[in-house]
Image (cartoon, rainbow, N blue to C red; front, side):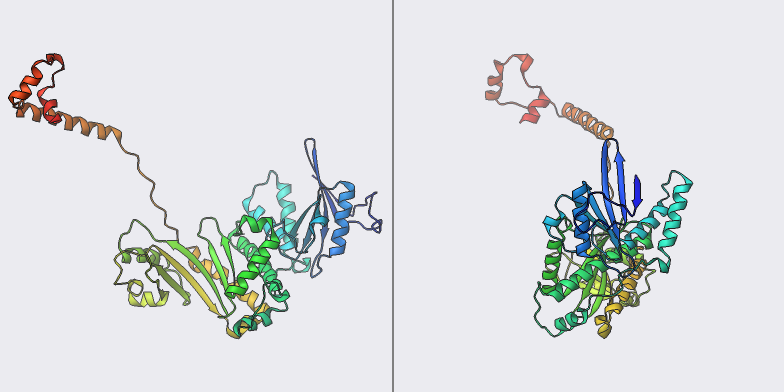
Length: 424
């Protein structure tokens, strides 16, 4: 891999003779060569569509495989881009985007994994990570929602109709997508492992479809949501309710099937929540069939000394699953652009430290291999017992017709007394 800065190209589109991209990456693997132009912005500077289009044209003219942009703008996947470009502009050249926060997180995780062949590689990356963590580096996380945020929140509270294609809704969802990515990076640094946002393959391939679908969901439900995938734990769902002006984190757990009674299943969960101190934690029990769920705060369950507040006396079968939820009611502060971001980035790590890291999901015990030797021995014992029993019983008595009918049968193929008894 060779990396170059401030590269001049002999062949350049009209008006780009004196313009140089920030970098060029050349990767050689055997006879294959892959190249990419790099354009980066720092601090609050954002990418420019005209400049990006000119670099895409430059890449096409010189046979460059990809264009990589780096800025403080966050996206859900590296194949997505913060700028909306037509398919014609991108044809023939791959376009990728990294945020500086993603670069910083990846560097820190690589240092934690300690998979370096030599000391120099680790030392260089550690210095890069140290630079990226400094406040003067120009690296910014997502700090506030879009300018229309307050108006959108008020519109949902007053039931003013909003359309999924309206600019304020699209900007709100786009801001939420950036915050979702920022939460994933935040939790990755907190846990020392990659935390990804759950996304369908259709949304991963088509960011415009993802934006359209999420805008329709927001208008229909007045909620913004995302799901974090954490290795070793159940999925963590984050929901912002614009009508109720609340933030909520939820984890769902399957009840242990090796416990048959309701109190035993509920106590299995309560024992694991013994270190949880937050008074806003609520436990929800889901019951079989159409039985309505039951819920109780963790404080009420502890005050009652057991699972009684969750148990339904009219249902014989035990609950099949539980939800553990932590809710923050922000009230009027919900509509403040920066407060909303600050509160949600406090809630998610707090919920995981209070709940997620303590509850081990139930896993059924693996099936045990049958002891075929024992089964065979038992069969032989039963066979010997049958033989002895048949000897004691003696041959059956036949009627004259039966004896006559067997008189012509050769003695070698006649049924023995025991087999004849079994046949009858």
